[in-house]
Image 1 (cartoon, one colour):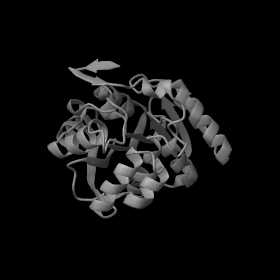
Image 2 (cartoon, helix red, strand yellow):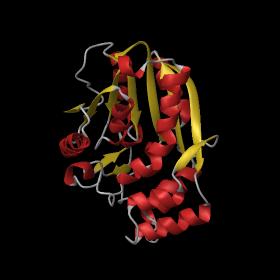
Image 3 (cartoon, helix red, strand yellow):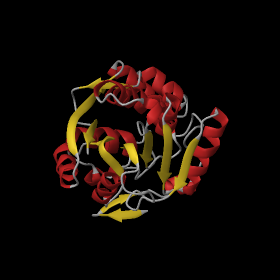
Length: 264
């Protein structure tokens, strides 16, 4: 357990368990079935449409790649992907799963605030589901800016610090025993990041924020609550949970999650 600014957050869970990413039962599988349907189409549109970047000519760095949920999505698009994460067990799980899928991804154990790459090495850097877990997230932004090529794109998503995010991720998500779908201390509300705070940090490090998008439920809220209760009781898998709630979809509401991109 880490105590950060008075908040307790359990980042060591990724070292204690390696079955959380691809089993279909682990909570991290929700990233594949709920988060990816929200963010991957947006990132793909930013790169291929708005930014006119050819997928077959660019390298992507996934900072805080975990078990490779997002890295595999980029590899499937045709990018040359490098993933880095401080959890060696997560890196091992990512490597094994990519091999089983026939994907070539360069996975490395390392820290986002000390990236082992040369300046201006990558045309695209992404950092998703990461910044809200670490105290020195501004150091990560600094490193992202350093390894990003001029004109390169930084893609991100994180959690807003609002009353609604406290309800969804803290109360419903990990505290209330009948609804929780995350382990205790997975998140600390005080560590969530307001969009204006992130924008100011990006500007300080030479990154110009272009866009921010929010989310909206992909399905009926009542069905989502029922699915949450069933997942809580182990009656449905993470894959089935994502199917029933419809995943998240892009929308205007940034009160809970938000994603966006910046250019160096």
